[in-house]
Structure formats: structure tokens, C-alpha cells
Image 1 (cartoon, rainbow, N blue to C red):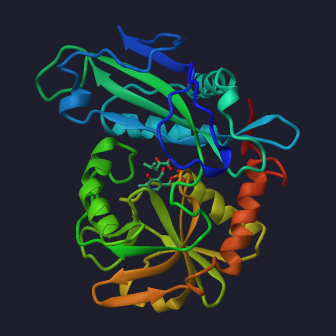
Image 2: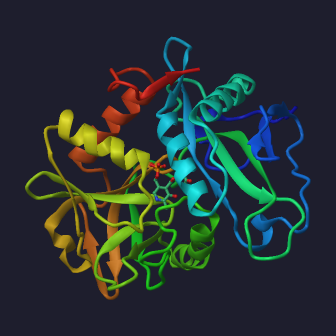
Length: 339
Ligand code: PLP
Ligand code: COI
């Protein structure tokens, strides 16, 4: 049991050991039913493919405390399906949507005391993962797998939350044109560690990657998707099959169209045409909606809105999305699963 006293209002995105985590094994061609365990250490073979060949994938989703005390999971079916696609991409067995959602609910229920209170802006972040384990050395799929979910209470991923952040265009690539960019696999994140660290050293919140083939189009941030608002009030987000198909992005596309009445476009976002946009943002489960104050590209710097505060459309999108997540606003059909 952790004896830490959590200050809900200053939580960032840091590991905190919570009470119980879910652990299931895939052996002899099937997943077992899994159980909740106290131990936060995994005991795995030194030959595990996850350690050598990056055979693993992960997910990220949040549970929110509502005003009436109930608990909302936001679109866990989407995370379940994305984890199935990521698993398939690296030859791992799929976890059923039902097992995924039931495991998420169990983890939330048994760590209820870690859910940040309604109104704090925080949430309980769930981190599901599938890893290849078991004795092995050749480059091939593992003989056994682990599916686990742990959770941590979190606040803002980018410090300051809705305060605009400065980003820089990276000259590194995160994923190859026909590689694993659309799968949530660790290798993409390993590739982003050095570029991200270099950007942060220079004072930026993170870097933004361009398409690996031509380096002319914006793809995404290392930990979130990119979107922008044109001067004609259109919501635009990059069309690419090497970016992670984000669930926040998908949700914002629907909210922008259905609730804000904006035209929504998935298209090329040319890095030398950033002046077309009056607002820009990064969106993701951890990042929520993070306004982009500026983007540095070589010697050029583009500024969005006032740079000091989020623009009006991003604020409206944030209010809609966060209102739905904590149950204050009516959710589109199927978006909320009660724990
Ligand atoms: N892009 C990357 C590289 C990410 O890591 C994430 C976070 O999961 C996203 C985009 C946004 O995805 P989602 O909104 O499903 O969290
Ligand atoms: C998420 O938003 O869930 C992510 O996985 C992003 C990052 C923390 C890797």
C-alpha cells in the first residue's frame, strides 16, 4: 500500500505504484482469465522477445470521477480494438474486447482511492500492455505472452495543461512510410526518445515529426496527434498511414463537426504553409488537448493565436471533450462505459 499523500491539483504524469494491477498469461494457444496482483515487478525470461526484438505494444486510456461520484471510462472499446491491431502488426495474440474492458474495470475498481476527484482536472490513467515472453533467442514470435494493465493517477502531461506550449519540427523520423507508425508499439517511442530529449533541452515541450518520405508534411507529436484550425474555421488533421490513429483525434473530429459545426478535413498539412492556421493543438489521452503556441521550423517560427492563451475554438473543443469525459455533457452513443 502506498502511504504517499497525493496532491490532486499538482499531479503531473509520473509513475506512482497503485494497489493492484491485472496480469494474464497466454500459454498453450489461449489467454488465461487473468488476476489482480500486488507485485509491480514482472519476472520474465532473459530471452523474452519484448526485451530483444521489441515485440510488445501498449495502450493508454483514462477513468474519470464524475460529479455524482460514479466513474467513467472513455471509449475503452476503441483502445481494445487498437491494441488488437497493434498486436497483430507484431505477431502477438489479440486480447478480446470483452477481456480488455473487464480487466480495465477491475483495475479501476480496485484502485478507486487513486482516482483524482471530480473538478481536479486529473484522471486515473490506465496503461495496458502486451509483451512477448518466454525462453527464446531467434528473431521470431514469442512462445508466451503477458497482458497486463496498471494504473496511475495523473494530471497534465505537458506542464501547464491548457497553457500554449512551444514545439519544434524534428529532422529525425519517428516511423518509416510502410513501417509501424500506426501501431502503438514501443519501437516508435524508442525512436522518439532522442529527438524528444533534444527538443526539450532547447526549451521546447516536444518535437513534431514530418512525413518520413518527403519531410514536407506534418505527421504528429511523439506522444500526441496534431490538429489545426484554419482561418476559415475548418478543423484539419494530417492524413497519413504512419501516424497513430488517436482516439482523442477521432473524438475531436466528431465533436468539431457535430457540436461546433466546423468542416472537418483529413489532409496533407504542409509544414511550409503553417500561416494558414489560426490555432493549432496536440491531442491525445495523456496530452488531452494541449494548445500549440508556436512551431519552430528551421529559422522560421510560426505563432498561433496569441501564443499566451488557448484560442477560442480549442477552448470550446476542450470544454466539450472534458465535459463529456467527466459526465457533465451528454456523450455521443457508446463513448462512456460506466465502471
Ligand atoms: N500519437 C502518438 C504517438 C501517441 O502516443 C498518442 C497517445 O496515445 C496519440 C497520438 C494520441 O492517441 P490517443 O488519443 O488515442 O491517446
Ligand atoms: C497516451 O496518451 O496514452 C500515450 O500513450 C502517450 C504517451 C504517454 C506515450
